[in-house]
Length: 389
Ligand code: DIG
Ligand code: MN
Ligand code: MN
Image 1: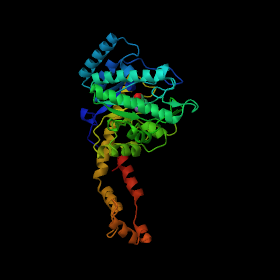
Image 2: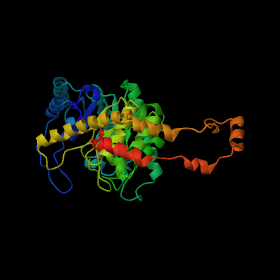
Image 3: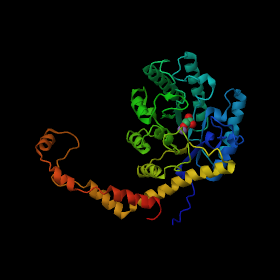
Image 4: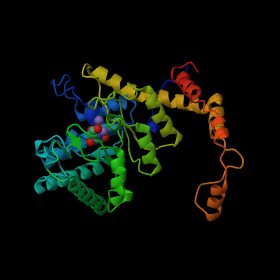
């Protein structure tokens, strides 16, 4: 049994959104079951359980119609609570989905007034986040979508989104905020279909921006899995492209609405491959849990939820180290990647190389003799995950 106590530490960079611990358990078919937990209380609870950071949408902290004086007081009190809790604010974002004015999109809305208001709200949210020290700004286009494609051409929506993100990048430069923007995809809910449905869509969108270097992605486990995708593969592609600016960790059962379950609680094996990847590449960004407790929980249960997210990550991190150190696994990995002497070199093209490749005779029967013991490799993984190795 491991002697580690899986105690979260600041260097683990675990963060939670105000809306996660503050989730009152309301769902489309039932009212809230928990009292409101003010941001200052959330900040202190996060400090108590060992989290590193707290994230927020503008209106998680400042009510949408607060006066400037109320806003300043709220920010002052929150800053103090974060300092007392020993937590930082690594990421800020903007709520462009709750108020009815965004009932049909925000940046991609047909009404120019709604598009302008969405931009104004986002500029102010950037100001708020900068005041709290955030250096990552997430944009989740929860309402950017349709129930019927009669309402606008989908390429028009892409153009409007590009215009908005370009505008925000210019504001970021003008204000000297040094934000990195992280775009978060989701295929549906709350809209029937959301534009930029997967992280891959955003990876194709970012190069078309005026400041692509300033913009990356914020993949979320549940959102990619809602689309039936292998989450770690999308994360790996984003990482390889230098675009993994943030990550939303949670869990999800296949074929369901966005459950935002406790990290690793539904599919520990895919959570393991994700943690192993993040640790193998030494990802040094926030490990943000965008999740919430079951509706059945009271606030002690909410703390259990938050502790569980971090504990599971640390357990899987230890399992990943065990996997990497396992001699049998490493032997199999070497065997399955061994090159036979005389195999033509490929890599980058050369006339000489391609001539050699074209003249080479491949013995397909001999190639087929090479074993691929993936069943054994996967069982060794399962043994490690189930704690018998
Ligand atoms: C939903 O998964 C979204 C919103 O909670 C927020 O805009 C973003 C922040 O990580 N995730
Ligand atoms: Mn989600
Ligand atoms: Mn999210």
